[in-house]
Amino acid sequence: MWRGARGKCPACGSGALFDKFMKVTSTCPHCGEALHHQRADDAPPYFTIFIVGHIMIPLVLVVERVWQPSYLVHAIMWLPLTLGLTLALMPIVKGAVVGLQWALGMHGFGFETPGEEESHDQTA
Image (cartoon, rainbow, N blue to C red; front, side, top):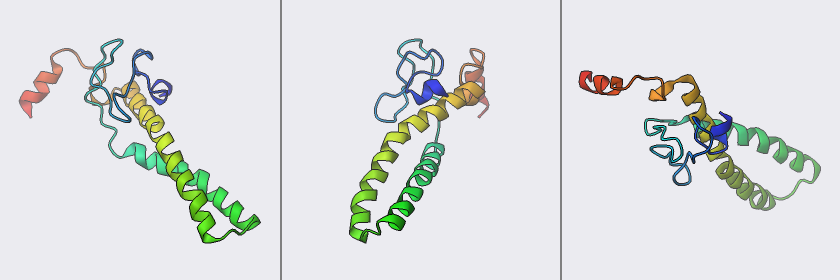
């Protein structure tokens, strides 16, 4: 999970995990590990919302309790901070989810024998 959270290949820890902002590369450029069958789906946004919410809500409550700024000041402060934190954490969380899937052998990560993928395709 740590390798994935750093944006590195979960197999070798050297190659880049993402081609673009959050698009997982089809194969590791360093070790050749196939990553194309990885599907994190809705887990990274869910975990990111959970983390950001647990960071932001206490901060908002403390600021409101101590300084009681206007709603406009709240919007100017918290909207950009929330969006920035979300965009910063999303690739880290997605990389960690990919690393966890790889470590658990989910979605065909390195624990299938060669040719096993073709046999699944023919039966489907």
